[in-house]
Image (tube, rainbow, N blue to C red; front, side):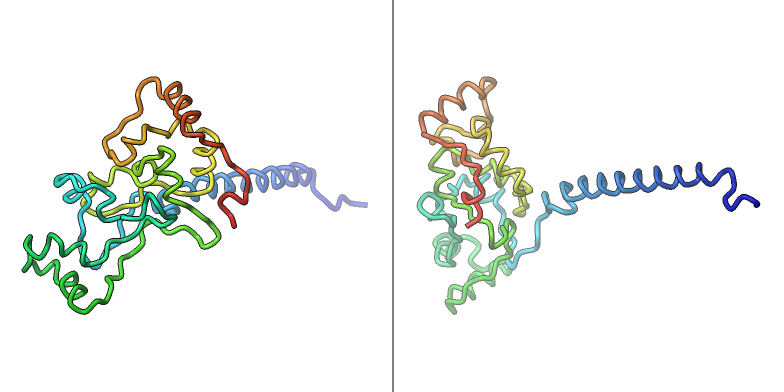
Length: 216
C-alpha cells in the first residue's frame, strides 16, 4: 500500500503548529503594546474645545492657582468646572471684545453653560475622589501633567488601572508636601523614597488596593 502522507508531512505539521503558536504570541504582544500606547490611551491628545482656553497662559504665565477655577477639588470627588461668571470676573475688562471669547460672553448673558469636552473621562464603573488625593499630598501634575506648560489641555496620563494601582501600592513615590500639591513645577528630591515614606506615615496614607476602593 502506498504512503498516504509524504515524508515531509510531519515536518510541515510541526512547522505549522510552531508558526501558529508564534503568531498567537506576536499578536498578543502587539495587542499588549497597543493598549498601553498613546494611540489607545489618548495620552498627549488635546481635543478641541468650544473656547481655546490656555492653561499655559492662565496657570503658567499669570500664575492663577488651580483652585480659583476648580473650586471643589479639596472638598469633593469632582474638582469642579468654573462657571462663566468666574471667567467674566476678569474678562469683563480683559479682552472683553475678543471674538474668541464670544461663547463666554454669550454664556454669561444667557445663563447657558459652555459644553466643554472632557479630557480625562473615567468610565462610570470607576470611582475617583479628587479631595482625598490632594489632601493626602498627591499633586495635580501627578495625573494631569504640567498643565501650566500646555497651551491646550491634553491628557497627561493613561489613568488605566495599572497606573492607579502602581501608585496605590507605592504612594511614597508620588506623595509630596501639602504646600506643594498645586505647584506644577515641583520635582521629587533625590531622596524621595525616604521623604515619601515619612510623608506616608505623617499623612496616614493607606495602600488600599482592594477592588471596592475604586469600583463601587
